[in-house]
Amino acid sequence: MSKTEITLGENRLFLLPSGAVFIPDGNILVVSDLHFEKGSSARTHGLLLPPGDTSSTLEKLEKLVEDCTPQKMIALGDSFHDRNAFSRLSSEDRKRLERITEQTDMVWITGNHDSEPFHDLSGEWVEEFRYGNLLFRHIPSNDIPSGYAEISGHFHPKIQMRIRGHRLSRKCFLASKDRLILPACGSYTGGLDINHPQINSLFPEGRMCFALGNDKVYRME
Image (cartoon, rainbow, N blue to C red; front, side, top):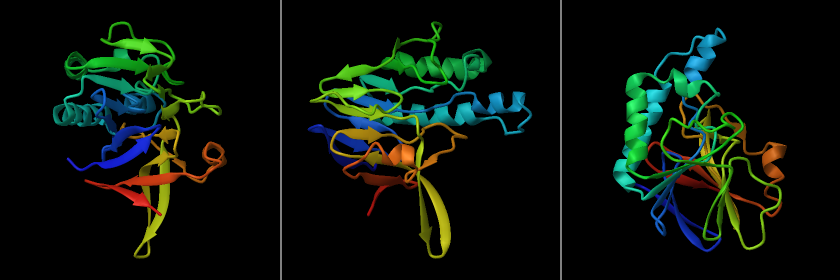
């Protein structure tokens, strides 16, 4: 499995082409913005997105758990697209999700789309989670507590690039010495350009950008 190593708050992290992060100290897998059942939500509002987004995202999670065998998995919020998303899961997708959560200690961080816990689902629901000096949240904070580094999601960062005359948009990680923002792991998830003022304001001293390729993470200069 291809991975790119960075250091965040003196912690060694691996950025994965799937958009997930693996923390070897603690054997922790981190994913963000799964947005289960976004497709079915769109269809209730007349947007004819094809079905299968949840199954595709679950397939990605199954592969990550198989490859990383994490002791703990942290989902950084907006795991479900709305408060009724869990009830719209097919019986097969619900079983697949339960099998995933049974293989690891699951931590669900609440997001703006799933602010209330789904108590029928295995795992711990929290507003934020701390491991050592790492602070896990859904929405990036303006002020990170002294001595901590923050890992968050929410913005679904994307980078625009031009290659051989073609304009491309790729999901990406954004990192500084004390902050890491993950891309969305879910299917049908849009994104916010990395130069948007809301993102720029979080990195007053600059940032590194790591774009997702099909099987590799690329640092963009």
